Length: 501
Image (tube, rainbow, N blue to C red; front, top):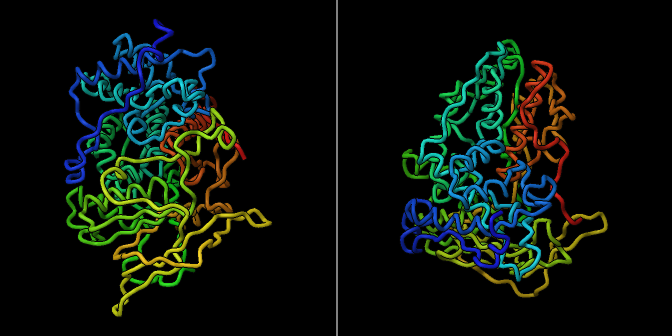
């Protein structure tokens, strides 16, 4: 650390966004392309705010980054302008920093020591520095295929090509195993491809990383549902180990609300997937927000993705509903003290573009027309409480109901776990009460030689946790096949982030 007063000299600066009128009219990433020189200068200044703390909570697995990214190290290297060494240090712990730099909500920043006090000017812009290192790495040709020198002669099947599956596949391929990734969709990437909107991460960012994996020797098979197109018997016969990285895509629904079965009421992914396919050139989406009054139910990331997608499709209006009260703008030290993930109001770029958000409200009824299509929602102010058993209960606090226009309603109220699939039945794997696949301390499931990682194991979570689990399961599979492993294992199966309960 060259300057211990860097955080006092320089204020935190987020990356600048493109004008709302421009970005809401296309599907390009929302942030402004400053050009390499201006970007590098700004990012180096932001990296200079890092204090190189004696105890760097930013890469603590319990509070900050589960990957254990060596954040103070590459912050200092960026400050000095040593992008190549910074790239080496970043890729030492993270297979896909361009994914996390764009998509991760940055628990590392929440755990930054500069987050302790509001007077410190805010945490280091770690996520911005990370993305810049990744982008410079590609621009300068620093990302190269890493091929194994010796083949183990062992074969591994990875089921699912999301971030967890890709991380596991890359690590195992580099360890000398012959890895085949199976994907049931027609294109690779899982939710990175069809769940994340183009304006958050352009798919060329994913495609160039897939090209690296192919050049390293990882094999890919698309449009193949394991358990159907490839039977469990064939899987067992052809492979020495199997990694389940199938995600947790079973969307949560609420069939108890009157009018739920009206046309125009859909789960969020039924909207996002066709919209992403349209961006891939597959033709117009079956569910289109153009000219419609759109209501998004759910205040999380998926709801914001639906929000931004509806705006770009030309919605007449967009309203996002959240049954919880509006969070505070700053961290409440009593409710979520540093360094835990803070309960604060999170405003996504999409929220700046159009529409509105409503808090502490819930839908009482979906109201349709004579043709059976939703046209309005009946809304009531509510309070969320806990009953005697600890379950959440939504209690109305108003006698009056409000009617909002709604031609398209999108339910973004979370996920219930792994989808029911023939593969799990064939392997004899039963889901937990949370809808996930359990495993032992070695990441191995109830089925011998079958391992699990990512959302399939944790439930719907962050991209950084998916990559961390993918890297860890690669270590376990490597040890299973060879007796030991030198691959990194940043997390253990039962690890949870630090939280106040």
